[in-house]
Image (cartoon, rainbow over the protein chains, first blue to last red):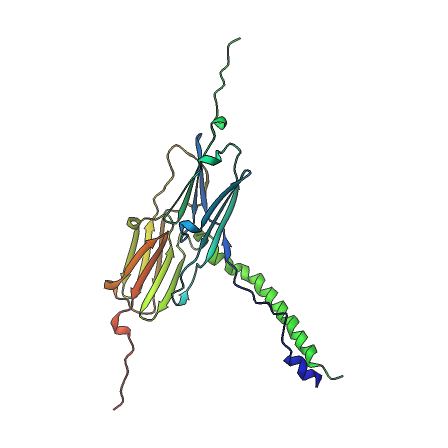
Length: 128
Length: 148
């Protein structure tokens, strides 16, 4: 009976989907003075080797992956494996060679130095 | 005239698809719990995971930017309270463009289902996550009752 055969037919449209890593947006603080721009981003649980900071053509991209070790059955789970991603447009005046980054206590601190040419200059007015 | 079972199958398949789409729609609500900033919970409560592991409770809390001295962990019976103060790290002389990480003090408390043994608690702070291992108190282990 052809009906029975239909039920028995395997559902070959079922594609196994591996669990994707959720993305999250880290909270940041941005500070600026005439020499540099500072950026502090909250990335708790991310290890140094899992962070990548990229500057390309005026865009700064941060990415940090956090993987937690699963120790048992969760009674209450509010945070888990996540990828922190955020991008910013940065002014052309940033000196890419001299960017410093530090990861401490789950906070990524970036120090973007402004290039000399971009620092504000006082223009002297000569009396005519 | 006879409804083919494959037709019914297909109908259920369509309903499944609809259900999945609706799930994905509502999934968005749950997403923010696992990945947004902690500020979306009631003011300044760090997000926490609790795992029950046989004889211990393991608690993990997201506390970025906090050093050991700024944290306070209090345990009483089956009540656990984590609180702390984040020192403001605004460097001097800088103008603030954006301040999303605000919020200095935070606190979160839990009443766990079993009594805790406060003397044997282990706590480590690593990469901005606080890991606590709370052993359950002895009185909780189930006893076998023998019938006379």
